[in-house]
Amino acid sequence: MINVLWEKQAQADRKNIFLYLYREAGLPVASATDEKFMMLAGLLEDNPQAGVVVGKSGKQRKLTVARFPFIMVYVVEPNEVRILRVLHTSRKVAGRYQQ
Image (tube, rainbow, N blue to C red; front, side, top):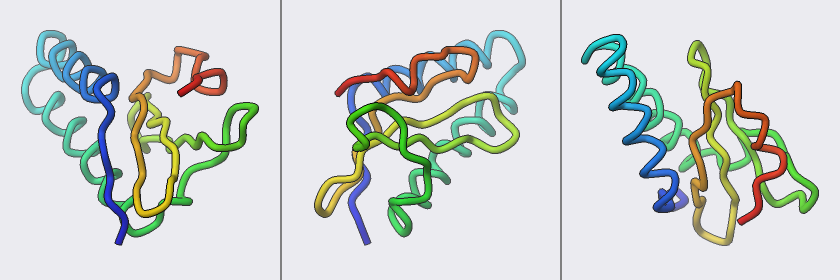
């Protein structure tokens, strides 16, 4: 099993998404979304290649959050996965994101 680490920016993304959804849609929606992020982090522990390659370097990958308009941008390194960002799909920056 691989270690999954949330970079500071990814942690901030999660917090901001939670707070926004909490204000706009309520606690059940905000909690369900955050639980989905955690479930996908668990998936990456067992299957770090689950996402598709993005970016010019070929090192970054993205994982689409099913039923939610979000993606998780991450890199796979020896013995760990680093989640770099959690982005809304309307933001067209995932393929250009640099570490």
